Length: 195
Image 1 (cartoon, one colour):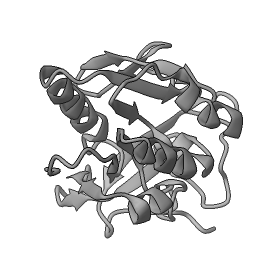
Image 2 (image 1 turned 180 degrees about the horizontal axis):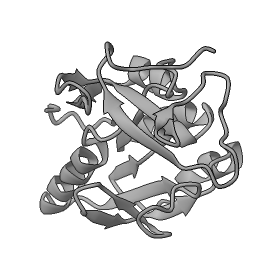
Image 3 (image 1 turned 180 degrees about the vertical axis):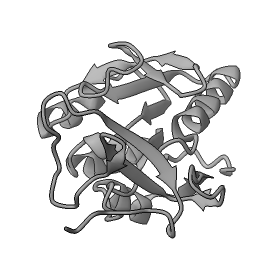
C-alpha cells in the first residue's frame, strides 16, 4: 500500500452507514498489530453503541479505544494522549469538528500513519464535514458501499427514518419518544421529504 519512506500519511475510509467502514478500520488495525506496530484508537464520546471505550462494527468486532470529547478541545488533545504509537485510528470522524483535519495533518507530519473512518454524507445527501476535507488532504481514500435496502443496488446514501418514514429535510432532531432508525439506500431510493 505505502512504500517504506519513514514518513507519515493519512488514510480515509468512508461511505454510507452499514458499508463496513469500521470493519475495514479494524482490519487495518489488526494488520498493523500483526506487523508489530503500536496502535492508538480514538472514538467520540457521543458514540457509545459498543461500550464506552471501544470501537465496534455491526459485525460484532471491537477494539479498545480512548474516548474523546467530540468538540475542538477533545480533538486537539488527541496528540497529547499518544505514547509513541505509530498508528493512530479515529472512528466516526463525522462526529468531530473540522479541527480534526489539522490534527490528522500534524500526526502525519510527525511520521504517524493516521487511519480515519466516518460517513461522508448527512441523511440529506449533503457533505458531512470534516470528511470531505479529510478526503481532499489524505494520501489514501477508500469509499465503501452498502446494499440498498429497497432495491439491492449499491448504496451510497444514509436514509434517516422517523417512525418508519423518511425524515423531513428541515428536522435534524426527533420528537421525544419517536423511533429513529437508518438504512443504506442508493441514489434512486434515497428520499428526503421537503413538505
